[in-house]
Length: 204
Length: 316
Image 1: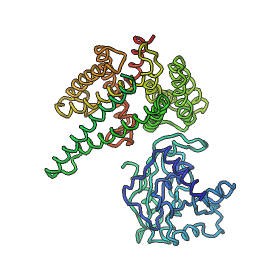
Image 2 (image 1 turned 60 degrees about the horizontal axis):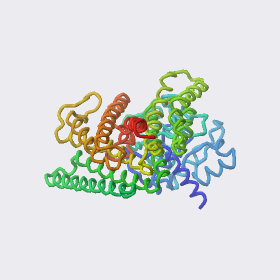
Image 3 (image 1 turned 60 degrees about the vertical axis):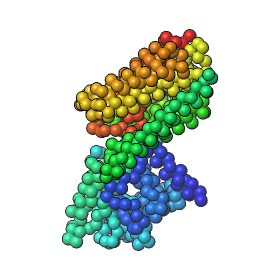
Image 4 (image 1 turned 135 degrees about the vertical axis):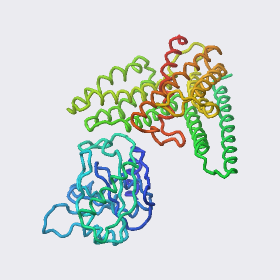
């Protein structure tokens, strides 16, 4: 109960502050396993993306988050587990560790959708960074799952790195057309195409 | 007649006008649907605009019911939405973050607190003097010098237009006009009605007979016929509303003429900024109209002039 109140307070704040609305440019909101992947410029990217989803879709959509960051304090653990229902992954880069994508695949198999940021880290520059390969591996392991490119506009100005107080600016969240891995497509070509799909949403 | 009777009468008039407009919009839509063009964009936009007007008039009415505090809070919110639109379209850098937070969370509320406190001296110099000096200091401390002057100018401009100028509407409540005590809310109604009716009448005259454009490089919709017809009929409307003001009919007409002219020119200035940024509207908040600033550009320029003329010539 309390979790729900906290969740709607957070999504309400995010929407009021940024006036953000979802623009379903290339697809419709649907309840089915999907991977929403977006550009990453701010701490609160996933909050806004999550907040603009219709409530029924939001209920079965989980952000993929870094385990080290979100496990470091009680408040963070509470928020990520109880409020956002995040999927925690290890980003340690230890080659002997087990496949970090296992929990994400499990969530997709449980008919849930996930939100990921394939740039890997918050991007401080003007250009989007090259994508990490996680998106490719997910697409290869679960070919039936739709990949939805999402462009989040302006949020980097709302709360840039190093600041805790957001400034109210208008943001928009655009959802593009679903894409999947081609039969003969290699990793580099696929990641390039996936990245371009987000870039194309900028100019709509 | 008491002030509240006059307010009711005024709202009755606006209500009648909107009902008439809705009826016309409905008939136009019926006629165009009968000809097999169910989605004529011009008529759909007209009806969206009329619908938005109902909402706007309703919100103003609710604010007036809450009296002085309601009016101040309403315009503080209006300033907030306008400033958000302005800064969204204005490129700023990461180094401006603190200055922007100060603008939104300290300067904006403080300006309206000053209105509520009736502190005219501070109200009139707070943003042009204190904030003007404070913001570049904050920006300098962030140590980002790229486009420094440009960035500072943009934030200051946004505050002047969206907060300082708009706050002159509720500031009309501060004026102490002999023989007009307790009626200042009607001055706000006069200003808002004349500015907005001038915009509406310019649109109507422009659609009916507009050919030649006033400033094609700035605005495709402003025509000579719209300008002349709109400004003159808004001035007549202002003169006809003299009974709610401390002015004579002639004075009310002259004030309305000035308000309408400033409003028109303000619209041109704000269009120039939009063209420079490559957008058509400031936002999408008010369906059919665009953003808050699209509806308020004329108020921003008319309000301070109306305030100071009234203050200079009519207060004790």
